Image 1 (cartoon, rainbow over the protein chains, first blue to last red):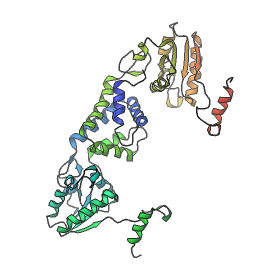
Image 2: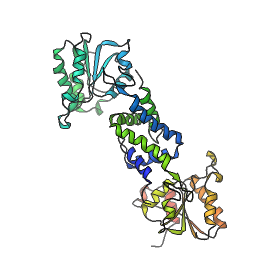
Image 3: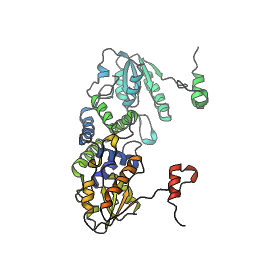
Length: 199
Length: 199
């Protein structure tokens, strides 16, 4: 027996599909599951299936939610004249955690990436334009990663949104809070200079 | 919406039960699962349930296997006069990987730990003694961790096995292969000295 029982090796293989999980971690997870009360294994299995049946994409903003339209889109306390465009639905949770944004969201579902064959038609751009056709929305904030693909997508969006009478902005770039000059890379420092504010 | 949809937060909670997985990793795993094809989520869920139904403890050695007695216990090419005692069933896989042991195994199911209320009656000691009553077994190798509890368990086993006419040994302690004196701790070095071999 130089290999695991089939059921165990299948579980290890499955755990390896998680991001950043190699063979050793997958083995650790599988061994741990087998040592835990059966109820815990059942619960994880159940939780996985539940996400498949319960979670859906909000038809309006594109976020993952247990209903459509999602609680964010129907929340009457939100500012419905502001729209924050993100590439991935999980970014919404990060932004919500800051408490800084009270407007609505729109999930693109990715960034432009010619190398990976992701063109404008793969993103939820049509849905974005449809939303902007309503005169209610006055401001669009682009909250997209500062990567090559992210920058390209932001520029493309800026062009595309010129036809609408909305104010378009992008998240500020600069030094992270709590950082020291010594540890900030040149690109960030350059952005921090060009974006300097009266003090 | 400063919190996740219920199904998502349940999945994150469940992933956090895995060893060494904190909130951030659990979130990453959950987000990844939701981005993967549904088949993959199904497969992990299924793999978890399969381990519950398919894997069982071998009645003889106590290893986890898809049948009882397990393939190791019924393998006619193994040396049936040698028995290796391990604390946990997963140790068997590590030992098998070395290819160094051709005998049988016996899983104790833990180590003595008065603080955690694990006494001799919690371990598979009775089963071990029953196996040793057969005159077939001539040698027992104790392959238990070199920890406080492991050492206590090994000493306890040594005492208990005196009544049987078997040769009892414990895995050798010394410098790990490929290590340098500089990086080996004092306890290990002391063990390496006292266990020095003619060269």
